[in-house]
Image (cartoon, rainbow, N blue to C red; front, side, top):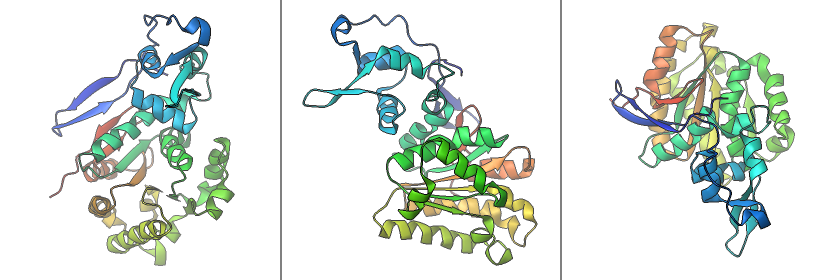
Amino acid sequence: MRRESMVQCINENAGRRLVTERWRAPNRSVKKPRHMGMTGLLTIDEAARYLSVSKTSLRRWTQLGTLPCTRVGARRERRFRLEDLDALLDPNSVAAPAAIGPAAAALETLEQAALRGVPRHVSLHFHDRDELWRLFRPYVLQHAQRQQPILYVHEEQSRADVLMRLCADGLDPDQMTAGGLLRLLVPAEAYLRSGSFAAERMIDFMEAAILDRRAAGHETMLISGEMTWCLSGAPGVEEMIDYEARLNELLLRYPLVTIVCHYDLHRLSGAVTLGALCSHPHVQLPDRMVAGYYGPG
């Protein structure tokens, strides 16, 4: 895992600012605080300097359970062991891939963009299912940890793989499903109902799913779909990119909902990939998050 410093990038073609996190080795110049001799603990400011990350990232990782911390005092302030910080940066650590890197940085980028009214709509581009899960996993873990519902439309043959990966991360798919926090569907139950695709019908389906969970008390939700269903040749699949663009209008009405669309770089054409770039405000690449080219007409 690369450990370069956090950098700001400018997408000159799109004319938008975006932020991606890259990582460097821990900041060994941060001196061990004098009080560590007694407590062995770092404050959140010291831990952030040591890892060269933001305090916001540290708070998120502790909320996800990725980074252990101790709470002290009446204000329940976070304290960190140096050993835990070093373990986080160990490429062999189980926690490291989900905790740091471009996938986790994407969550922070979405949060900041949402404050400016940008829809939480991401096209995620991957080469294989391991890379797909590495990039998508932080979204799943964040929503699962916060007891926020997830709707995932996956390929027909991928159910066992999805369940295996959820279980490997300590999640209980059966319990989540029973509690209304997980709904797994295949394209024939969503995009290709009645054997065809229609953008208007699918927009209505998405809104109905959002309203169903809102009625259960959930304003925040994760919706995701694997987009290889467009290779089925079913009538109407040519409306897919128009549908993707219209999802942005839907998300403006539901700003706490995140939609992540999965695009297989090996199986989908360059034209489809270009369409995805132009219909999403956020693009998750294997090594970074960048701004998409979507803008209201």
